[in-house]
Image (cartoon, rainbow, N blue to C red; front, side):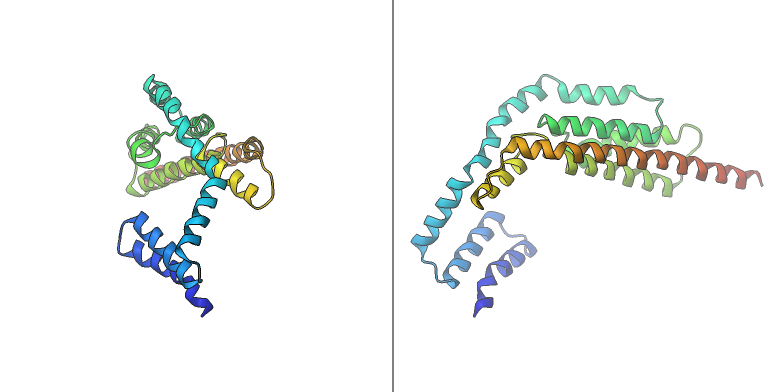
Length: 229
């Protein structure tokens, strides 16, 4: 009978598999789990209310949205785009390193660059391809490699720098969760401990992209020698 308490997980899996409404699936899952576990509806509502009160600090993130909107409206995001577009003589690896730096700094101020779909694919990846094809035409394999490297750089910057903003949802959620478990953790402490990770990520990824430049030049040299032979 204890396994019946896991019915909520089954409901969530089936709900997502059939692409049902996410909120409805989560609510049904919570109610089903509570009923199977012997929790009455009033007790369930009390538990939900208590959890909301204990984690209400997470909702503070919404207070930062107007500030972020004002910053982006006055062109800070567009300035980042323009700065990248002007740097046409850099190598592919250096363009990716510059984007990684901008990505991490933007995360530190709570500014989203829209990630893969609206930033990497239409802007970063074409710029890297243009830099790589300055001397000769790229092969389909090289284009795919550049696309993958561009996407990976964006993921590195977003994942390891997303907790640099003190009012981000992730930081507030971790702080409230640790507090509910009896460990008082301030959001600023989480940010401070996230800074070394962001710095290490930038260093490692920069070396990674530098190696990409070298490997790209080696492959190009081998291709040229093969053509001459």
